[in-house]
Length: 490
Ligand SMILES: [Zn+2]
Image (cartoon, rainbow, N blue to C red; front, side):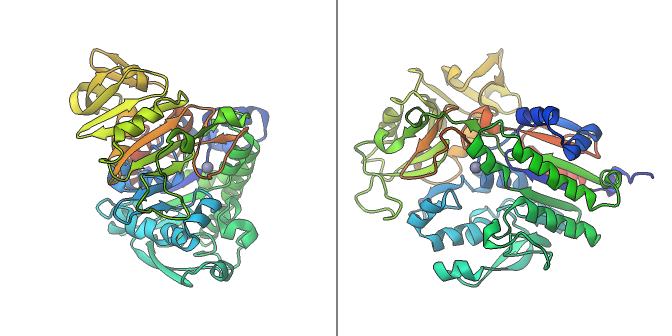
């Protein structure tokens, strides 16, 4: 059988939550993984694609779909403080956090405002760009899914029994749009009950995708998200391979829905990619957890259940291994006062804040200081130019002549610059060393397992496996994939 030329091939992108290079290679050696092996044999493997910071799914999906970091797409992270609304936004860190903040507000943030209000309308998603070209796209289960077609989400009765929320929410998404059991393609499908997280699981995503294949209705671009492996790695640590075996089974089911596996590959471009990595967390809770409430004493920190009150001085928005810390009034608590407190904790591998156009960086280990700003003589691996001053070892930069290369913190300068310009407010962003996690008011703890959100390369690098094309993105960063995918669909 002859394959269709690249220009006619439809693009199928499968995002495999927490797929990482090392465990994948170990699993390929020690386990039987027919699907991954087949893709490996017929495709090209790229071990290190840079995820945006904070390394957490909504930010990753927004960066991938818009081709920009958070300074442009406007979704700072999974949880952040909105100065405009004077409240903490939370798209779903943990049920307990959300219960304290108010479940109905959090649900509306994740089900409606994320895509329809918070995601900057000045940037377009891959779905919106392709729609303008008269092409169709599918979004199967990612949280970020903005498109041009109006859909109606139906909130399950059980949720409405406990949470005050409308039965229907209208949202703009892709032509083929799956959002758990709230918006589905296959009316007869399984795996969508409350016990199956209302369809936010690998089997449901897989079944919805194969529904498209069975109906010969695969659009020009499909984005299929498999969420399950995240929790395996959180619980059992970075080297967990059980979840990789499960994902292989999901991929087998997808391939099996085509007449043959060869036809599946011949007629489509497949992109398999992780979303973010995870760092192992120490067993000993004392060593693992950096207690922010303690570190910021005696400042008055906003309680999640109370909301921002007059007497509060500081807001914490904790994203597992990174965190935004806000001063509500810099005349009362200058950013530098917060920074000085944070610098006493040597497990903080990055502390960063902005003053005018300069981004300042410190760490809990180093007594030195470092700052940088856009445009200058120094040029990094991604052709971005910077003016750099101070001890650059804080960000593990190597500088030869004026060429900057990165070590432990991939694309460190642009990722920090964008994070500190991602939203309004006076804040410090911090990240902890591998082995550690940040402890706020509650927030889940993963001692003995793994976690993410951090700035370190453990959290920041994901593998990508591509079949059906020899072309590559300009750079191997999540933000560089949009342009490449648009080229592939042309
Ligand atoms: Zn996670």
